Length: 457
Image 1 (cartoon, rainbow, N blue to C red):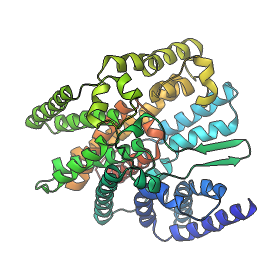
Image 2 (cartoon, helix red, strand yellow; image 1 turned 90 degrees about the vertical axis):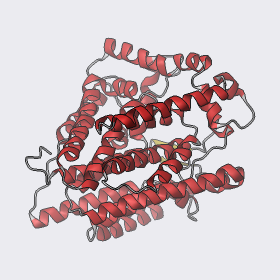
Image 3 (cartoon, rainbow, N blue to C red; image 1 turned 120 degrees about the vertical axis):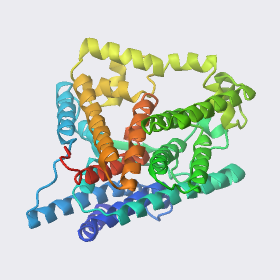
């Protein structure tokens, strides 16, 4: 353990010296590394304990980079830029901390909650406070588009070769134990593996789908704003949608449609609104050729098509199923919280408070979970953060003279709307592949908004 901590300390010192030289390079490195993190770490010849610690290296790099920037700002006597989300972030963090104290939640649990929710606030602050240029943005967009295309190709190999490729891509299971804290990483199991599952280098199909969703919608915004959009981008959209379809995440497909319709309405492309609606309708009509019940899919021992998987979510047995978990969660948690502790919730430790809310299984409804942990004050503060992101994105979209900035801002607006919807299905904003890129684009837009006259950043 001492040797491992010493190694981490040496790595940290090296990172500090490196990050002080080029902050933009660090951001690009992390943006291009995270999609391959699970795959790359799996093959390192290290112990399970060190492997588990290395899963936090990307966050360590980010925080060390922010420290290096703070040191540089102090030396140069330049103040940090005040951002529009500083106040709601402070209120949210204070509420979570106070909720933990009032509910006698262990301090470690409080810190872990704040870490997973706000860990990429550091990335946001970093991007807002450094000098960016269009060369950086173009490299970022092109690099991420290339990674999405690469994930499609990897996904094809999974579909055609199945288990042989999956074994190479699956993350390495391990358990990290530090004092009273324990974190276990397991291989994905269950219903999703019955189809020709695609998870690329992310180790989980939903993580892959969330990553592609963000890049897809941002690129869609760029396409709609660009005066002469590249027709090859339609191929990119087709490959991206195909990959998401084969992650078997029905919620993400719904989210994609919602974001698409939102962007077309913002652009007042009424022809596109109508045509997009027909595309959605046509997609649902296709499902009539693939009738399936959720019970049939859940008990099947054979591979199912993504269309059957999608069709099953429109079945009566699926509606009965969600009434026992997600709909039940959406009703039961507010009922308990608003009657027992409406302002501060039951404390920022979901595992510890589940038994205090219900004896039944609680589904993945992030907004209900947030209400349960930090109450109305915390939930409203968090929604305030998203509202500020949306307002800043809208400002850049309306007033920026640069088409690339306007396009990214339009796409980000679609991502915010999509996330608001998807978090009724799962904890997207606590998932690294979405959270990192969500805060990344928020930081870019926050940086660009500084150049807009009378910008209320």
